[in-house]
Length: 370
Image (cartoon, rainbow, N blue to C red; front, side, top):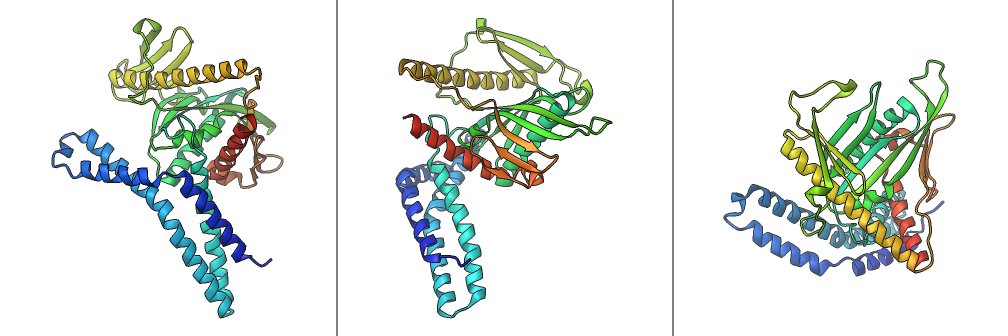
């Protein structure tokens, strides 16, 4: 089927109009000027931590600005390529234009999705926790597969990550794992991944080769910032220390450096063991605890608003995505209906389609509820 280049390019320009309308380019320009001024200070590198924050923030701001401003030029070049191919009846040039159209459409779609991330905490970095659920050793193995999937997704995009805690299951896999994704909008993107994930496959741990269904829970919270006002009295915290452990329960160090922090009023528990010292693990646990309590507070306030409005609706269903490896191969999101047959690609981190569909679905739900 022939590509309608004229209509496709018109649609791209319309989408870019809305992207520019939502994206505050003037603010980005001002931020870049300010950060460049800070980066030029002779004493900047006297404070290594601040210097890294300034330079990384400058790099991200420039990249964000360039992504938007360079897209119009790319669409212009595409239009010229199409005109050349059509005027000269050159099918090779038109084929090249079709490939570029697909690439530009994908890039513009990603920009459009970013404009939908306007929630209170969407611009934050993210803390992700994965826990094995029902399904025994298969569930623990599934939890480890999901951890690899998200770390590979971040690696594909060049996003820095830091695994903060891993609790290994006895036979194989993980009881739980917590990691950070340290890039702006990580929370906005990954928040749609929160929920119960379901795996159906022939169990590699069943000597009779039977099909097994197992579950794992994914929790995504925004990383706390210094400007957030979540104060936790010391009297509300119970802190236990223990030795870090590796696969099979083996001890990986000889000191009680791991920390388990419990918030007594809510029963919220955070464990950290991947830092080198007890002080570092305690600081990391407190930061994640503050982030979780911030999200709990936000959820309570949202529930209260819905109750006052007389319209209490359940949140997303427990089971939000199925990964089926037998008797057929398919990964399907049960909220958005987005599905793919390349299960290997998904487990290797190719989940942008699911994230984009989730963000669009969430935006549609918010509009319907407003």
